[in-house]
Image 1 (cartoon, rainbow, N blue to C red):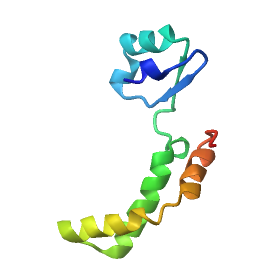
Image 2: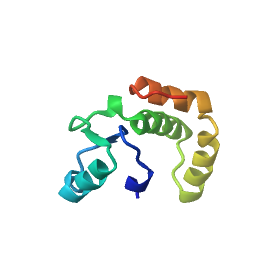
Image 3: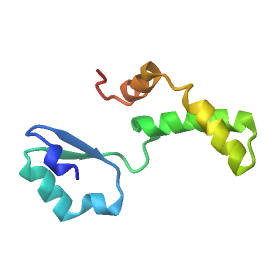
Length: 99
Protein backbone atom coordinates (compact mmCIF):
# COMPACT_ATOMS: atom_id res chain seq x y z
CA UNK A 1 0.00 0.00 0.00
CA UNK A 2 2.90 2.35 0.64
CA UNK A 3 4.96 1.69 -2.48
CA UNK A 4 2.67 3.51 -4.96
CA UNK A 5 3.01 6.73 -2.93
CA UNK A 6 6.83 6.73 -2.85
CA UNK A 7 9.08 9.00 -4.89
CA UNK A 8 12.80 8.69 -5.66
CA UNK A 9 14.85 9.68 -2.63
CA UNK A 10 12.09 9.02 -0.10
CA UNK A 11 13.12 7.27 3.10
CA UNK A 12 10.86 4.61 4.58
CA UNK A 13 11.42 4.18 8.31
CA UNK A 14 10.29 0.78 9.58
CA UNK A 15 10.32 -1.09 12.83
CA UNK A 16 11.73 -4.61 12.95
CA UNK A 17 8.59 -6.69 12.54
CA UNK A 18 9.39 -9.71 10.38
CA UNK A 19 7.34 -8.86 7.30
CA UNK A 20 9.04 -5.45 7.02
CA UNK A 21 12.29 -7.30 6.36
CA UNK A 22 10.97 -9.39 3.49
CA UNK A 23 12.78 -9.30 0.17
CA UNK A 24 9.52 -8.36 -1.56
CA UNK A 25 9.05 -5.27 0.64
CA UNK A 26 12.62 -4.19 -0.04
CA UNK A 27 12.16 -4.70 -3.80
CA UNK A 28 8.97 -2.62 -3.88
CA UNK A 29 10.61 0.27 -2.06
CA UNK A 30 13.81 0.18 -4.14
CA UNK A 31 11.83 0.02 -7.41
CA UNK A 32 10.48 3.45 -6.53
CA UNK A 33 13.98 4.82 -5.90
CA UNK A 34 13.37 5.05 -2.17
CA UNK A 35 15.35 3.42 0.58
CA UNK A 36 14.62 1.74 3.89
CA UNK A 37 15.91 2.70 7.31
CA UNK A 38 15.18 0.31 10.18
CA UNK A 39 14.68 1.58 13.71
CA UNK A 40 16.83 0.09 16.45
CA UNK A 41 15.19 -3.03 17.97
CA UNK A 42 13.22 -1.07 20.57
CA UNK A 43 13.33 2.66 20.20
CA UNK A 44 10.37 4.41 21.84
CA UNK A 45 12.27 7.71 21.74
CA UNK A 46 12.29 7.50 17.95
CA UNK A 47 8.63 6.55 17.67
CA UNK A 48 6.10 9.41 17.86
CA UNK A 49 3.22 7.05 18.61
CA UNK A 50 5.02 5.84 21.74
CA UNK A 51 5.18 9.42 23.03
CA UNK A 52 1.49 10.02 22.33
CA UNK A 53 0.50 6.64 23.77
CA UNK A 54 2.47 7.34 26.94
CA UNK A 55 0.50 10.54 27.49
CA UNK A 56 -2.78 8.80 26.65
CA UNK A 57 -2.13 6.01 29.17
CA UNK A 58 -1.19 8.46 31.93
CA UNK A 59 -4.36 10.50 31.39
CA UNK A 60 -6.49 7.36 31.21
CA UNK A 61 -5.02 6.10 34.51
CA UNK A 62 -5.99 9.40 36.16
CA UNK A 63 -9.59 8.86 35.04
CA UNK A 64 -9.69 5.44 36.74
CA UNK A 65 -12.27 4.25 34.21
CA UNK A 66 -12.95 0.55 34.67
CA UNK A 67 -16.00 -0.28 32.54
CA UNK A 68 -16.14 -0.39 28.75
CA UNK A 69 -18.49 2.61 28.64
CA UNK A 70 -16.37 4.62 31.08
CA UNK A 71 -13.19 3.86 29.14
CA UNK A 72 -14.85 4.77 25.84
CA UNK A 73 -16.07 8.07 27.30
CA UNK A 74 -12.68 8.82 28.85
CA UNK A 75 -10.86 8.15 25.58
CA UNK A 76 -13.25 10.47 23.75
CA UNK A 77 -12.55 13.21 26.27
CA UNK A 78 -8.80 12.62 26.41
CA UNK A 79 -8.19 12.63 22.66
CA UNK A 80 -9.33 16.25 22.49
CA UNK A 81 -6.43 17.13 24.81
CA UNK A 82 -3.93 16.35 22.02
CA UNK A 83 -3.41 19.58 20.09
CA UNK A 84 -2.06 19.67 16.55
CA UNK A 85 1.00 21.52 17.83
CA UNK A 86 1.66 18.87 20.47
CA UNK A 87 1.34 16.05 17.93
CA UNK A 88 3.73 17.90 15.62
CA UNK A 89 6.17 18.15 18.54
CA UNK A 90 6.02 14.38 19.07
CA UNK A 91 7.38 14.03 15.53
CA UNK A 92 10.00 16.75 16.01
CA UNK A 93 11.20 15.11 19.24
CA UNK A 94 11.61 11.85 17.34
CA UNK A 95 13.79 13.59 14.76
CA UNK A 96 11.24 13.93 11.97
CA UNK A 97 10.69 17.13 10.05
CA UNK A 98 7.22 18.44 10.84
CA UNK A 99 5.64 21.12 8.70
